[in-house]
Image (cartoon, one colour):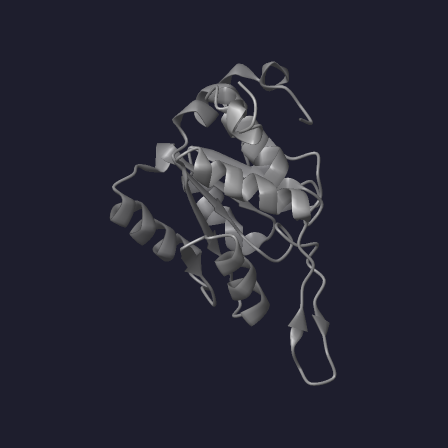
Length: 181
């Protein structure tokens, strides 16, 4: 694993221990933000394989997972389906409204939320969350609003880094190694 929990400040560890729902923005967070289009108009997006493993691991550990994206994308919908993520909200411009509805549906408080984003649209959710995280290459206003900034840039293992932190803080790292003791 990339960074051990004791290397994080105590307030970050405390916030991570309360997390029951992790929500990721997609473009610029789970991806590098670049958009490719095929000659027939299909969008092509690259996701990091280690992020996929971490997202599945988080679910195996019993935590809730969601994505909220400002744009519609069949490629994103397919990847989330492949990962078994059921809380997928695409084409959402008012992320805070969707996030509050999701918290209500899951009967969770903002203190139990970790939100990860990179752009201005992500500032309200980051400020609402008990643990608001910006990716390393987020816009300056998002970096300023966040409780923590990842060492990874968008699309380069952000989800893995965040999920490792949360699982380490909650003593659940054995879910990364289900075949061991």
